[in-house]
Image (cartoon, rainbow, N blue to C red):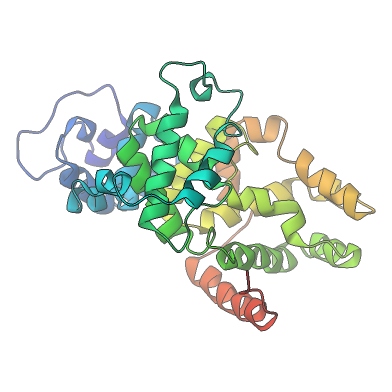
Length: 324
């Protein structure tokens, strides 16, 4: 059987006895280094990730693709040392404030549940706050960490995946000035003006700031915005292909509902329409939706994103957006 196909075919349990190769079902391999090499060295892995990683393998794949597994292996005991470090009452209070607001409808996060995942969530966020003191804790990180905990069922793995997202894939999204987040919202605006000029013109005519309509999409990575399975499919690709996936999702949502959005006549109206386009059958059908995000927006390379980020960031800095 093809080695790459073996990555996603859960029916096969046989493990290759030849050390260092990726034969058989790679999911059964215990060596995380082998898994990382298998995923990173196969060009067709992208195609299989885009089709969706099986839920039972998602944690291992995310760890491998994001580099989180390598970081965890290179830093044994680091997570637990962070939890035993010097106390930071301000950080602790900020995290506790948001615990009850994190997935209140999910029974696993309710205080009455035993065990309650609020303690796990608190630990992950506290450790990350100590690890990345330039970020500390920012609202929105609680939802991301909560999703990671539900998928991995492992505190330490959730911490390292959070580090991959906040520290590498989405730099400066959650820093006090949120310059990375503001920059990417402006980048989306530039992409819309180029690819969907009618919507771009409407936004300018009504004087609508992009942060009004898409800030939650970006800061929560579509958690509690799109259906769970759709979000997980997006995250599969986010860990593998990087932050350009966020723009692909946003552009697809806007393009698919362009005529509906163009009916808006006021700022409140357009804000309401942007909320409505994240609901309905289009986003529920996750397989079709994921196919659309790689076809509807057209070409979108990381080089293009990087160039737009550079110009948008410079403009924001000139406007004093680096000040908290």
